Length: 180
Image (cartoon, rainbow, N blue to C red; front, side):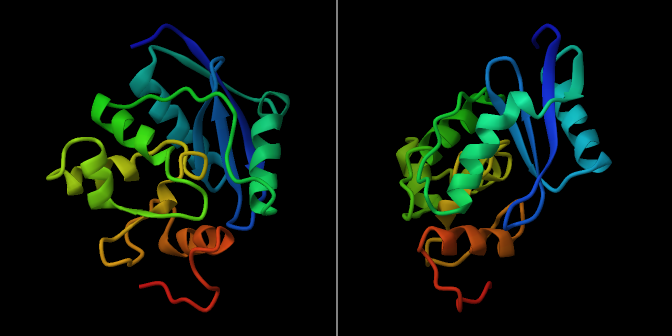
């Protein structure tokens, strides 16, 4: 557990996949949630209480302007990677998975099995799926690029429709592809 940490929120960034809520600590981006409003802020508070003794949440668009700009250029197809500081909180296993996710290039995908092999735990496919689901910074840490071994779209915390849109944006799927 850490001493008190402030988390700044920009509670409503519009995107092609709906509103996004961004959060950061003094060290970097710590959260990106699909949606906005009181329920999302409550989820962020609950998440923060798990990792910090005490948190203060305040809205501050200025602190998150660079993140929002990079996300916007990603959605406009003019950005392929992000270079904002991150402040990740998770188990050591989750962090290993997230580090591998960060290495998946724009426009490419990996299977859960390939991620498990990359972290040196080839039998941990289900655990990789669980860590993928707990990714606190989707899009920036591209968990949407992880697909089923057969190439199917499976398991995305934001919903398969959002995953499909992100993969279409990156040229991995055609707009006519169906979500299964």
